[in-house]
Length: 209
Image (cartoon, rainbow, N blue to C red):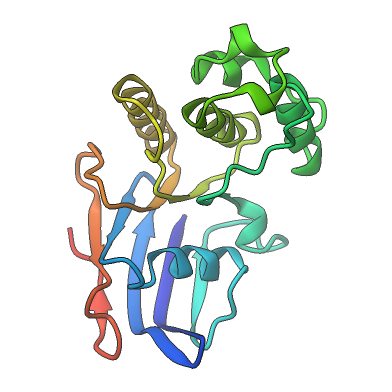
C-alpha cells in the first residue's frame, strides 16, 4: 500500500496555505510533518482525510480497497479529543467502535494498551487531558485501519504515555501500516521520512528520508 500526494495545494482564508506539495509513504513507513505554526501541518492532514478541500493536485492510496475512500481507510487524531463527557471511558470507546463500523469489537485490549482499563467505568468528564488523549488513541487500536493521520499526537501526554504511544506506532508500522504525523516534538521512529512545510508555498516540497 502506498499513499501519494501529487502537486497538492490547499487554500484557506484567501491565501495559499501550501502548494506544489508531493510525497509518497508506503506500508511500514512514517512521515513526520514539521513547520512553524500556520505552515499548514494540520491543513495537510485535514485535506487527506477529506475535512478540507483540495484546491489542486490529487491524493491516491495505491493498493487500498478500491471500494473505499481514503478517509474510510484512515484514522484521524486531531487537536480535539472527540469524547462525550457524560459517557464512561468504556462507553466512549464502544460508541466509536460502532460509529466506525466495528460495533462488536472487543475494546478491552485497546484500553489495556493505553493504560485505561482500570478507569473504564469513569465518566470521560473526570479524565485529565493526558487521559483523554490516551482514550482517543485507543480508538486507533479498536478499529483496524491502515492509515494513521496524527496531529500533535504527543500533546498533553507525559513521558511514560509518550513511550507507550511510540511503541504502538512502531507496532502499527511493523504490521504494514502507514503513519503521517504533524509534530513539533521529535518522534522516535527509525527511518521516518520528513516533510518541512515552512517553505512549501509556493515552492515545491518533497518528503525526504
